[in-house]
Image 1 (tube, helix red, strand yellow):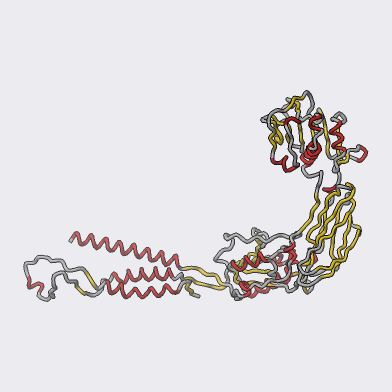
Image 2 (cartoon, helix red, strand yellow; image 1 turned 180 degrees about the horizontal axis):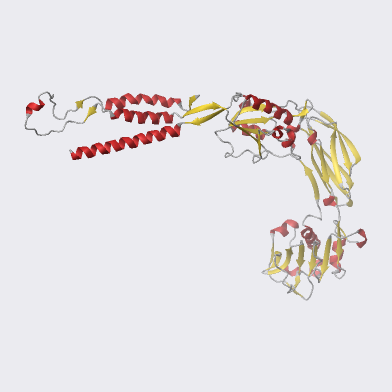
Length: 517
């Protein structure tokens, strides 16, 4: 079917009669002396300076055709035929896993999509994810129209597709429940030509945060925070069941108003491996009814300390709440050596000993050390030994220096080495001494050990399942016919350019013949 993208340009065709009219008027005649006037007896006389009105120059047809071709090109003509390309955007956020009528919204949406594609044959169908626009599946593959191809184990946030993917020569469809505000805002601006909306349930509660940290007053116990949110529109009464290492621990009755997120606090043994929190009974979205927390970051780390290390360093490590320094407690995960290299392959702290001298230059501290521990060391507290000249400093990062002299550095392994005198009374009597020891442990292990936090959470907005009003999508055209448009603008412009060159050549030849005459 022939269509025009800008039909108002056709009104400019009214200029064609003007072109014909202009070609009826020619330049005044040239006076040519003649010796026989009787030869021109039939010629009509003209007043000086007058123009001659004659039949139009035949060239007007060519120029009118050129003008008509340009006007038609501006009108953006094209040829549409059934069977165009379709790009389907699949909403695979958490809310699409909500179950209604014994199936998930994602399953229902893909089933509706399969029916719609049967009614609208297309030359190609590409299915794309709204959480990962780079993911593209062939719509002709039956597996691509099944929910497992789009289900994600974790709640993921939608990413607005880049403009480069939104091709203008493709019909864009959307399969969604309309529950995510970000998708609604994107769809209102995107060139969506058809939307398949699913879902009607509005009530949902979820566990949105599960966190634990060691009790500073009782290192064998961990303080736990559980946050449950009511993301529905009605008041809900639910039971929160806690499990430690797969065994039921405790339960709590929760009565929550719409939008409320009550926090619960409790204590459990710090040696717990896994902590799970789950709401009962289940609701429309079982995927967010529970969270599981790995408690191992709170477990104490076994450390092996070189017996020749200074007593102040040994006592500071023995009183570290995140370390176990008794040899009878099993294999070590951290080694502390003084005056010798650490065994390869194990995180370690190496204290280089020997003759020391006071530090006088200003201390320069790397940003990573400032993030590990908040303390201010003074130069007059520090005495340092010399680094061993063994060529083992390649690949090390200086974390603390006195001027250009490194005092603390981190290398591969992970390994932390220092020449600071950890037995210097000027340093051991300062509160910063314990913070420095704690920073050494954290740097060697690559994670916080003094006061670690175990955390599992999901954004509360990911648990919204109530469909939103999407007027921009609901009012979009939902024709079952998909067409592919082929533009004729370029061929028309090419033809106009060719005719224009032909007219120029004709004028050039005419001017040359006139000069020869």
